[in-house]
Length: 391
Image 1: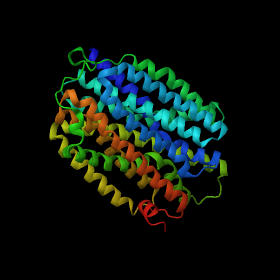
Image 2: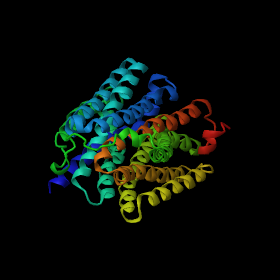
Image 3: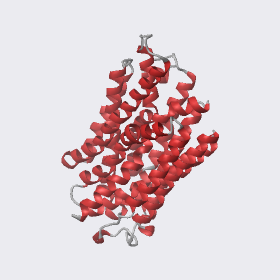
Image 4: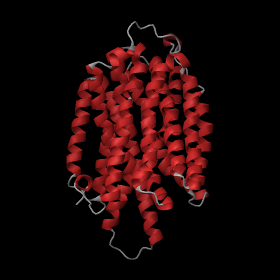
């Protein structure tokens, strides 16, 4: 019974860490409030994801030394502090404080706290590894739903749309919840993560080998595809909706409410697909194999991106975004069990943390590509044409 409690705690930790995926909810309001460009603003999110991958790699390697509880508490606290500093940055309209707070501090906390529930739960649920780790990272995928449909609208409402106060309120809430949940994270006594790693081969030898590099590249492709939409799905949908609005009966405030609500709804619905993908693809891999499942997942993403070349309809665009994030989440659901199957339990934490550096690169490539196109080529409706041709 205790193992399922630990698994539930792992899901909760990832659920609130996954609120970072609702960044696109704030993208347009921050740009409009501060006058910063989309590229400037998006760097806060990109830096956060970059530091997530880097610190997750460090955390995975050092998890046996410091222990899952300590790393998760520190990580959760830093992520919350990132929101607090972001609130200060928005109050003073300081781009550099935003980068420091939400980007470096918050992102470092994300990485330290992200890797611990996955590695810890895998020591308790030794059978059906895909199902176990998929269930935990499913929480991360659902985080955007919690933020876009519950936390952000509530705090924006009580603060009368004050972005600075909203970020401060969110940070305070996370500072209470995340360390509290993390306190219960501890590895199975049978597979104690805090014991010294007795493996005779250094993880570095595996990290520098060709098979690991191939996995890393595959993961990078999967992540970059998803990051394109996680960072900008709300603004992109709003752009398409604006092109379809023909009525003059709506005031500018009513139009803004309509666009904001529609964007938040897409974030929430796509996060369900993101979370479900982490669980579904991982569970499927227990039956048909990890590599086979990954091939199906990547092929699906390719087909959807081809379809997006021709899309200008907001509803169809939203549907295809959900499919992309279903596959994106699947990559995160598959990778922990794939690493454990390939390299064993003792190397799982260090190698899983190391492969998350692909997240760092994908977190820059995807969002920055879209940010550049939005700042410089805003006249196109078709998504990939919008990105690639500039008209």
